Length: 368
Image (cartoon, rainbow, N blue to C red; front, top):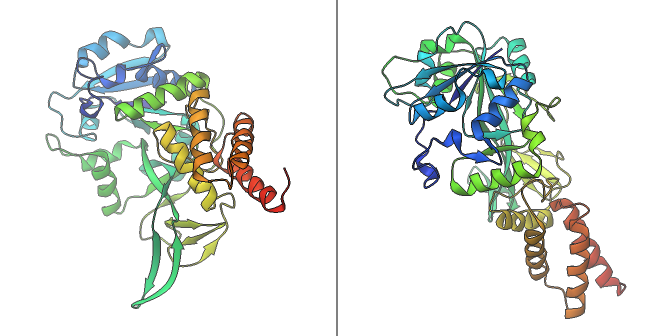
């Protein structure tokens, strides 16, 4: 199987880390980002890897050579003048079948082999890996129809399907790339859709980090150090994956507005696809995101797997104790102690919300 890694960018947003080295060679523990990706690809059965290089390309060539020490064949496609993330694909040699195409600054536990198999079975020319990400909205959201308010969701959480920077593409996509003309991957996806080509979506919920800023890089380092094997070894099937769609097809994915135990789809219908999500859980997730310097995690996400440590856990518990303002000092001490014990057993927003909820119930009944 063939993989193509796009790693020619200057990494401007990652400065000062990228002043004198390409972002793909930044370290995650004792491995570079690119080596982690290559090792995971090898474990998924990819034997031929093309690195699309440009900025500081000599450093990358010197690091990986022909790939023999890593047990893969590595060759290079050099773009002398950067023209966007998709343009280097036109220079890839010996590309005759489906290839996994991905950005070189992504850390993920996605099952590459399953993604590749799903694409081959789909009959499409392009598959886009999609990661579900929560986005809390700190305001009331109105459902306005014909000049009237049909509904309101107080501080909902949007569940957004975002492009993970990972694709599987057939060589047919090259028809949309004009040599010498700038084009990015989103433009390539749009061009395929406009031409009536089938674009598949593959949704996943495995760990995923976009290492695009110093803050995200530090977060990725923490998560990798906590469980290197999760990212180095290609694992089993993902939690779920989707089907191929075009935007005008029936059944295309819709944006979900989450509030309480129900979610409301864009057409106004209500579903219960995430019963663990409520306002209390969302508040805790927001504090957890603040402490970890990342977006608020999903209800079942584990604080420590996201890069948390004991010091950050103490900070989180202090924030939560202050946020929920127990009636008196004794109650505050009990809540602080209960949360501190609980966080080392189940450090998810949903579990910690259960502790707060239980504490409130006990306080109202006058018990411990």
